[in-house]
Length: 371
Ligand code: OSB
Ligand code: MG
Image (cartoon, rainbow, N blue to C red; front, side):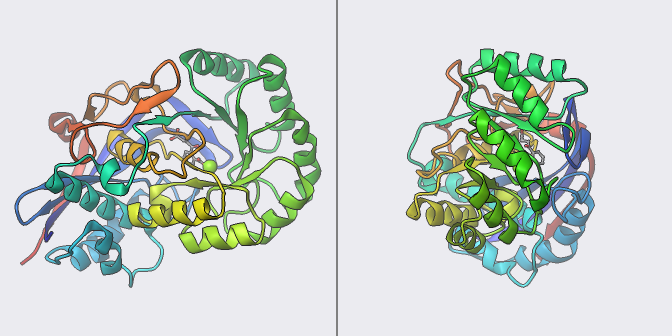
């Protein structure tokens, strides 16, 4: 395929309910969408999962826009690759900025799948037609509000509940949740809010039979995570710390985690995500697909990824209606009463793009075409 043009746009999408983590509260998403066109006019769509500020990682909406415009689009537009898996190497000289790269790379996978007339999940090597879903529930204003939300998600059928924790909203909250829901699959995500000095707090939480504790310590650390894992029974899962398959291998070898969260943006696209999955599967380390409050396009890519063999735990990919009044894809992503999402049968990401809806939400747009 030849990358004939890239269209970059920003849409604004208000969340139905604010989402709060240890690093802050989001009420409205600023999402970059990428549309890549090949020489035959086949289009593919990708989503940049950068946040509104440089808090989950260094990348944010503005940095991703700038890197795509100034560097990644000029490096890719007009270039020919045999497969979508070859797009990352065109962008190799740019360090980091993986979410910006993934927006382009994943769009090219959509093109390759559409050209081949197959659903993306099959092109990626997926092995299951439905994926297992959990939900990620942010920090709430009161414990009662959290318990109420959990009740509704459990009743909807989700297979596990993840709650965000931060200092002051942690062991006491987990204890209350467990008292009311003794049997649910439950886990916590700290988004790097603690240090190794907090090991006693995590030991205390061992009694609550959590499936895992996600990214308790620094975003760029593996050594202290290994020390913490030695001291607690609950499996550590790494999110922020794993930016590549090499990171996954090293983290597993040094005992920094027993479970890995895979996010397309954080690792730079489908090619690297496949490698992370392989590295973990070969070492019997379960993986699951994380979420970044994606619109339907990013969500569709996540669904495809989560069909790979190593994704044996329920992920954070859930129904569109939990996030948005109206989706930008058709149909919206829905979840069965068993807490599953069906992999689509249509070619590419397998959902229709609602162009008028996207146009109405667009606040800026630029196109890059080969001379
Ligand atoms: O750490 O997994 C995280 C959202 C934004 C940034 C980081 C994270 C999250 C989530 C939300 O947990 C998952 C989702 O519902 O998309
Ligand atoms: Mg996380």
